[in-house]
Length: 181
Image (tube, rainbow, N blue to C red; front, side, top):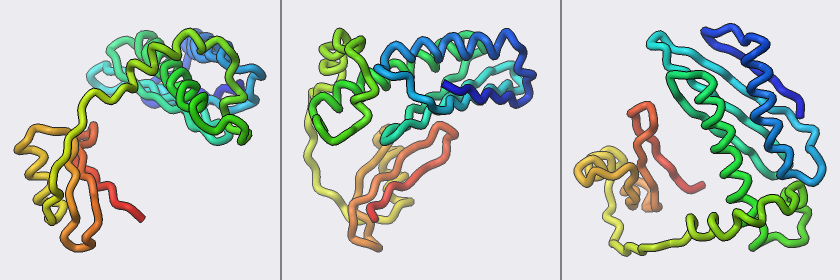
């Protein structure tokens, strides 16, 4: 893996660089052949001493990406590494169910993740189904309905396009809209 480590409002010291490379390199055990891929790590420190770590690992047919915040930079790096490891396990489980012979990214993964498959299956089990009528409305009304219900997202029929849309609350506190093509 080739590492590209950047710092915003922080100097990337050799110790921090070595720690990022050590933690992310441990993920290589999940691959049969270590992919010659770029690992992009962006380390940020804000005025209130809050650290944020973003790691992106592009692979053929798969994008691994995680971000975590913590007051301690090293703890944030640990959290990001754990999150990417969970993504690999979930993807391995999903791919084992589908795409057996289509040259999918599953062939990058070795048998290490097999022990986690049962746990991931349990995590992905659908435990509740809701059915409801989609009321035609505009995105602003959908945001109001979402906030009234106290939900993080709201599914509705867009009155302008007559298509199903989703509004959601973003991490930055603003709102997003998902529309079909």
